[in-house]
Amino acid sequence: MALQESDRLVIFGITGDLAKKMTLPSLYRLERRGLLKVPVVTVASQPWTHEHLVAHTRECVEKAEGTIDEKVFARLAKRLSYVGGNFLDPDLYVNLKKALGKATAPTYYLEIPPSLFVKVAEQLHAADMTSGSARIVFEKPFGTSLSTAVELNEKLHTMLREEQIFRIDHYLGKEPVLDVVYFRFANQIFEPIWNAHYVDCIMVTMAEDFGVEDRGSFYDAVGTIRDVVQNHLLQVISLVTMEAPVKDMTGPRLSIFRAIPDADPKFMVKGQYEGYLKVPGVKPKSKTETFVALKLSIHNWRWGGLPVFIRAGKDMPVKATEVVVRFKKLNPIYIGGRMRTSRWYDDIVFRLGADPGVTMGIRVKTPGHNDVEPVELGVDFLKALGDTAPEPYELLLTSAMAGDHTLFPDQSVEEETWRIVQPLLDDNSTPKKYKPGTWGPQEANDMVKSHGGWREPTCDSDDAEHKTP
Ligand code: BG6
Image 1 (tube, helix red, strand yellow):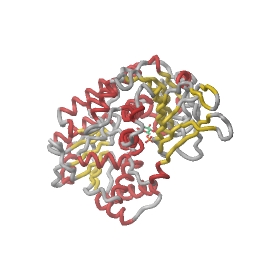
Image 2 (cartoon, helix red, strand yellow; image 1 turned 135 degrees about the vertical axis):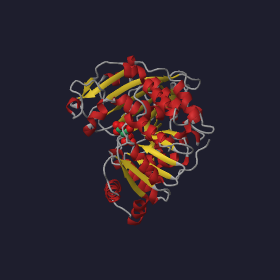
Image 3 (tube, rainbow, N blue to C red; image 1 turned 180 degrees about the vertical axis):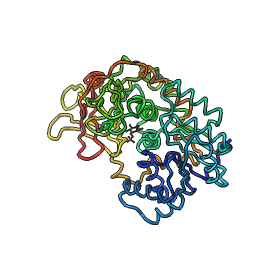
Image 4 (tube, helix red, strand yellow; image 1 turned 30 degrees about the vertical axis):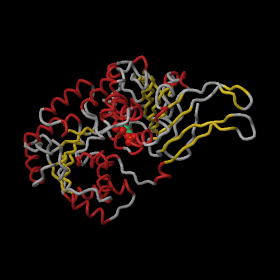
């Protein structure tokens, strides 16, 4: 049964950090674009009043946007209401039901600790609030391992149909990430070379130039592989390598995950930045990784075992998320009066962070000399297209309210991605220390030496320097 368009948005956990940084500013932006059309009921355990909620929302929006359009804000404030109470207390759901009035297709968005996902779903179910077109959006992480993700799915399926379940991965709501699909399939020239005959390897870097800071107790139980590899980076890899979508992208993405064998801890380097053990909330002898470099491979007709390298970490030299599609070296050529062997690989680089764009390495004649020189051909999306892209949560919340699953991993995708990383999670080795502000342990560089080394990413901010190996 297809879901009807939602007639209420219900947000559990509105007083939390994610709501502060992402959800409330996103609601404001949706209101500004005229895309928020339903009442928004917010829920949390604090005894807040409507005035308190509105004041908090104003503070969050001002922080995120710099300025506020009072007319837009007044419309948003009118839309908001607040229901306070303990998530495990049935009385909360009696009050919530009253607040929902005649709604028949509510979207419940749970941005709450994952340990409460099933409990809140059970309460909603017991209160007869999950039938028909109701749906629940679960914030990440969805499970902590293959077995817990399977168990979570099974429990939810005793109460909900698969189409009522939306699992968030905010990377699938990022415009530059989605642009990879347009770049590949809306242009004629790239797809013929997008295969193992031409491509040498794929490299993905997700670097953050800050540490774990005030998220010690959350992060220490999670680590880099669970935090960003199982979800964000595998989703990105699937978009870079999948076949062209016919109707939706779930099938092609799932086929890629099925073609990636279980990761092998032999091809993994774990790191932990010096000073991590002193972060409040981190266990004194914690072996949690704050950096990981690893190798996967894709075994299908198009990719024939192509290596895919991932490195991700906290406290790196820059903040940047990049995918490098590295092409094989040219055969020797006769040019400029002699035979030459290519010194360089050609890279197509997708910048997926705050400075989105695409760069391509090409070779040109050195002016005045019979020599070959690498230059870059690139487009900066913000300069070329303007800064009008919706933020991930705008896109994801409106998609869920429209009943559209395109941007959400389904159960099988969740389980395949956990399967891929599970051997890495089972590995109990101690991470190697690295100095904050560096690219992690040296072994991470050795891993990709024979493929030309990691590409130094363009930082998200200003004076970006492009270095090709
Ligand atoms: C989150 C992780 O899912 O993604 C964080 O929990 C990480 O640790 C964040 O910092 C990165 O998201 P973005 O959109 O800033 O790249």
